[in-house]
Each structure stands twice: as structure tokens, then as C-alpha cells.
Length: 69
Image (cartoon, rainbow, N blue to C red; front, side):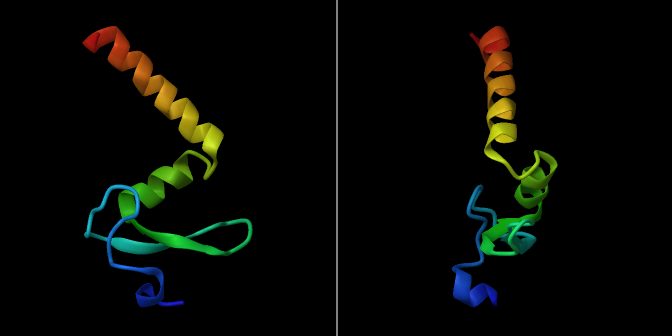
């Protein structure tokens, strides 16, 4: 698959146009879309799963509430 078939050369999470790569599911090999290197690595580091992302969001929300009201 080529980037042209997926969509514009823009990260589907943060809209960056730098260091764009094709993201895929490591279990199935299915292409999910285009992500910048940072977002792609972030998803991978959080286990490529929703529960890991939700825990990260909860962590940040707790910090923001504690220090920024």
C-alpha cells in the first residue's frame, strides 16, 4: 500500500506533516493510517491499546486538576 491510497501526508492524530509513516496493527498487519513518528511511537509505547491510552489521559487529567485547578 502507498501513502497516496491512505490519504494526505498528515498525521491523523496531531496533524503534523513531518516524519510521516504508515501505521499498522501489529496483530493483524492491517494498515490503520498515517501518523507522524512521535504519535506512532507513543501509541506503541502505550501498548497499542485503548486501556493504555485511557490510563495516560487519566494521569494527565489528575496532574492538571492538582496543579492548574
